[in-house]
Image (tube, rainbow, N blue to C red; front, side, top):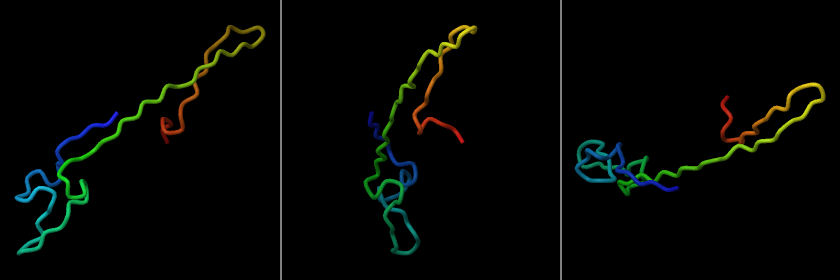
Length: 72
């Protein structure tokens, strides 16, 4: 899913998409690339589940996460 939002880095600038360095010097905003709009991508991953049966124990479900979901 793609989202768009106003760039918070250059939102208060007199020239959208540019940052003032001083005097007559302006530089392109590094966050949005000069467009004044941030494009955010959202990814959703569904963990894979499997039921494990061990003789003598109750079955339990193991979840395998996508590599991008792992913390640490």
